[in-house]
Amino acid sequence: MKNFNFMTAAVLIFSLHAPAMADQQQVGKQAYDQNCKACHSADRFSVGPSLVQIRKTYPKGKTQAFLNWTNNPGKKNPDTIQMPAMSHVGDDKLTAIHQYILLSTKFLKERKTKPKFTFKAPQRVYPNVKRAFMPFTSPASIAIALNEDMAIVWDTTKFTTRYAVPGKQNIFNGENKMEPIKKQIFYTETAANFWSIAKDNTFDFNGYRLKDGLPTFYYKIGKMEITEQIQSGHINKSFKRHYQITGLTEALVLDLNHQGQADIVASKGTITNNLLTLTPSQAKSFSIEVSFL
Figure (cartoon, rainbow, N blue to C red):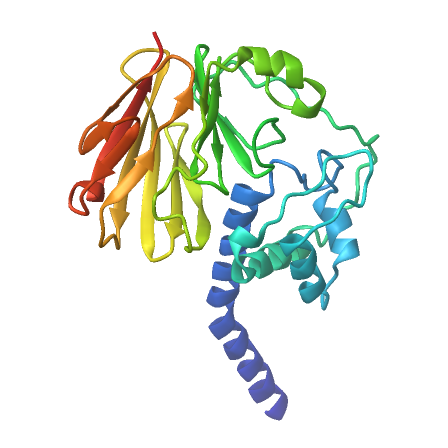
């Protein structure tokens, strides 16, 4: 009878904790998919080490060491690019990623492949989104190809578009193709601070979600929460950014200065000398469209 009571209690405890464990695993998987999957495969070396190798380097009980590395990584392998800091993800999600790695690779073994730093050309399916190394931007950037004529590079550290190239241009493995890619760039945003509220405020990137192949970014600048949806513009060679903002208590100025011939219009506010000024009410929901003729 005592054994029966002990087993009953054990099953009850497991049942109580199982939903929480499942939720944590799902959080870890989503965070891995958004921030790590582009460079880390489950059981083979790709851009960076596999999850199997990461589990060996940071096994159970080494979560703090995993956090230390992901928040401030160095360069362990001279044949690959240096991993960008993942501090924008936050320790809670990084911990969930570590737990996801430990559980998802529990029965996996490394598939031996020769380490190479290469990327396959993006599939000719549009729109498509890819996160990998590109030149002339931070390592934590995302490419959004809308069509063959139009692709933009969006920086998850600056919360702005860095530049635009033809969608069919392969801009990955960029450290080996800087000059050819540079010739293809037809638009570059040049503002030191795209956001007028950037000074003295922290930037927190909370990831993105895809709908119909296009990303919606979620981030915070200070107390201001921003949702930015990337959309196709009214012509092939154009793109639109739709913003929804909460927590703004002062006028907002966006610096739209750029290089390249572009027509920029905003659904609300006033553009003067490439500066878009919005009242807090206007900034709650507005769009900016950039077109190239």
